[in-house]
Image (tube, rainbow, N blue to C red):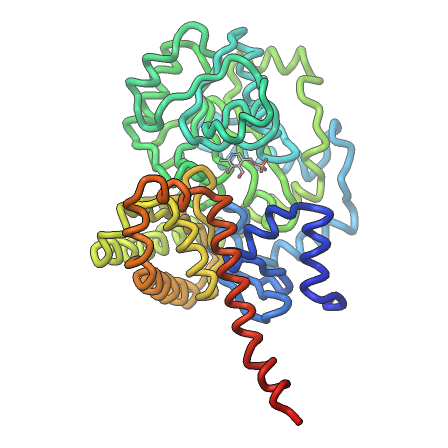
Length: 464
Ligand SMILES: Cc1ncc(COP(=O)(O)O)c(C=O)c1O
């Protein structure tokens, strides 16, 4: 597998896929190339370092990398199944639909399969508009629902929407966890209220039970659909199978993806309450959202993922490990009040908010040096996000805590320079700019790489 040099692979990636991504990852010491993948870690092909994965592609690897049981299910499934005709039923699809509806809270009994998270969100929004005959979709500031058409229109960060304008009309945004704001904007034109019960990319904000119950009540009053996006928070991540179970609030529609694919075979679904209007609409519009998603093999994998999460008690593990992690981070907050503002989260969806945006990327760089692959929240760079697999071991958690402590201590040494600079508004703005960070960290990385090569060059030069 190691026929090409790292330089060649990276250059090819830059040329054919994304140069910006290459520069960005290199600047933050995240330019690893995964080889062996096991449990909570993967090995970098060239340095041979085992990296503890705390990003997990925003929650794709809840059962761990290369889970043996899920691999076996996929291998067995391959003997008989493939993708299957997307529009037709099959035993794996039926089994998964039944399993998901049994698992889902309340009467979320209907299941539509989708190609990915964004696809499921698009489906949910179209369904809401179709069954209510109303245009307005309300989502929340900094929310992340994907990059497909309707999902992007509901994305709460303007930056992602701007380059694709004009997007779908009829989308409104309100602050998260603010019921009064939602009440002010929602009305007889509202087709759906769309929220993540625990916001991920926005910087790990947990929806309070009062807020979620309030949204349920408001949706009932207005006759609109309540959609919960559990693409990141579902499948055991927060300490319950679905995050909405913490509050007991049952939405009308729930979207799931990411860990549903077991880190092996992407899969996604939309679960819905069989409200008469929804059932009628779907019965009379069977071609409402044809998609190539929901492959038989994906369903076989998802069934194995569900069994693994339940039989290995991964919801409970997420709750216990999350408590340990938050406790340790809270101690760090007390020790370093000049840099850490808040620690929050639910289960293993945990965030540290820093007082400055540029500290998020700095922390991600420091963690990478300590062997932890982690990313700050996509829509809130000041929040370092920890989403390790609930399938991690206690030893993995010890390793993570040691790396976090070491990284925060390393950052302390840079602060005497960084904090005074950040007091000057124009410089602070520059430091917080992702492109400037990439250049700055990239230049530091180049210097570091050159310095690392110097002794070797001197050794060679000194030889007769
Ligand atoms: C909360 C949430 N919703 C939707 C999506 C979109 O999912 P996908 O990338 O599978 O389209 C994501 C992806 O990160 C997500 O985190």
